Amino acid sequence: MERINILFVCRYNRFRSRVAEAYFNKINKNKNIKARSAGLIRGNPLNPKTVKLTKRLGLDISGKPKGLSSKLMVWQNLTVIVADDVPEQVFDKNKRYGKKVIVWKIRDIEGSNIKGIKKTAILIIKKVDKLLKNWEVK
Image 1 (cartoon, rainbow, N blue to C red):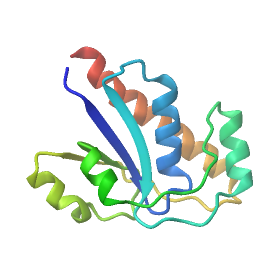
Image 2: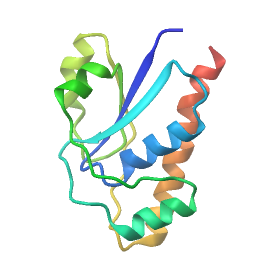
Image 3: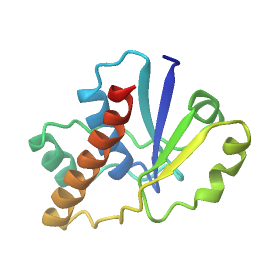
Image 4: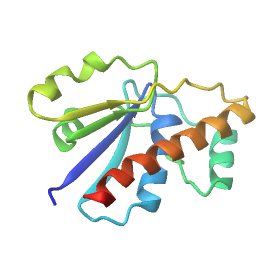
């Protein structure tokens, strides 16, 4: 199997892409598949309530938000946009180099909306499970 480097992207790398990365790395057993995350724009520090809630779901999303970089763009061969506010066109050049782009149109949630955060995190977890199943079959 070829090496797969997945880059999960959202607007600010404060929640959606971090949840996807943390969960993927927690459950992935295939050493040929690696995952990282970044924001289209590097965001402000994470909301402590969000970090606490995701910890209760068994995920560690702590740390500083990361922005897209040329190094990450070269590293990845699959971009998963985990957002409805990141234009797919940003990654058009990647497609010309044979890199794939998947879009999950997941809305951003305000940090004080605990129910919404939990619901969104669970949605992302289900999508990551489905993504990983694609490689288990092959």
